[in-house]
Image (tube, rainbow over all chains, first blue to last red; front, side):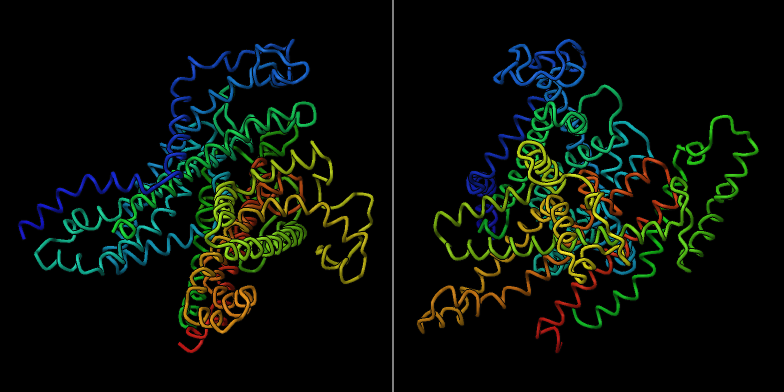
Length: 295
Length: 335
């Protein structure tokens, strides 16, 4: 017995390493995109060529530098107020990253806690949580976010809250089902037999087995959160005023879609690259960490 | 999903809808914006404002307002829209057909595309084309409908202006139809000109809604097809000399269909929820577009009515999918 335990312990770190190798191209491409996104957000003041809110009305709606009439000072052109599109895109990454990470982690914390409780206690607690999820699933999610953001008012906190309140069910539903499944497994039974109580079983046995699922869900949810922020900005109820956001740029770009379609196109491009990045990362992590494929 | 389960689900519908009603109602009552402030003319006296407030019941306590509103909802009366000053039920019923037709056309496009892609992917299993199909499915799944809507608007509305990008039909076409199901009615009446105009307006928003759903169908169906093709009966058919396309279509496909409907069917609700933004982007006159206006105008009765309408549609669709799966799957039918 001692030998087996020791050899398993020795394999532990290499399991993760092997997983990351198995995650393949998706994991690396997704990870790279997300890493670049975070770097751009962090370094925005140093890499942006202009002040994102500085207006230059004399050079409004300039096309990108390589197009006819473009100006090399404004690499991706300017919007209708003469603001530098590239700098705005770079600064907008900050809102996207903050919303993505904070909203996903909060929604995850709430959803995972409720899912674990419902899945492990069963009975009326499970029933109550499931009915609550039913009610939530009956809402059109986008409309609910829009109503919430409108209710709470403009601002970063409002956007994050709107996402958390809508999306906690994504975690709760899956974690609840998975907890119930894991508790039926032999190893969970064994944990009860050797005298662990419910809390210890959850913490020591069930939770470690849910980690791959949780990591994957979080990565995907970060992409979703970025999208919801874009949607709210697009509808006009996101972070206030001058703060550049991709959704806001899409909405502004739509007003001048016939004169300067590139404003909208570049903003859409940024959103797509980020969302695809988070999805690839989630997919890659799922393959890399999946306990079934690990064997 | 056995029949017993379905009955249990039916029983849960009224409490679920009541829950949706309570949440929307309470949420809207803590809004800082005042709907009355948006409808009064400048210079209205305090007495006028109070009278309006009383007219819309906004002077009473939240529980009182809820009981009164929900009582009326049960009898089919959703109240009056504050911004449009019409009955909410009439407004929704007038716009709902446009959304349902759009969602239906989008679903049909998604099914056709998803089937074609899945069959192509499975046919080229193990070859480079399968890899390309899988990659394509991944990208199309990751990009949501409203981004497709913007991409399509940019490509086929602006860069290569092929299709109309706004509205449901050209204003000069006369549609004095009996119902607002323009597409169905023009098809029944044989008004080909109207059908063409409707479809050309519907095409871009419908494709935007269809693409992510098509990718989902393709992924689910392709996985089920691959699994089914490895089963003994398919291998035996192959050994007996049947051509692979014939086996795929006649033997494998029917068996792969049930899991695809069971897992993918519920996602129609996502497509329906997506109409909110896609309709907005293409100025399509459905209930989704109306909902955003209602939020912007703080039109409480209209928002409540619209959210309940979506909730009813979502629940009905989920139930319909369960019933279809139960009918199709012999193991459940006799279970």
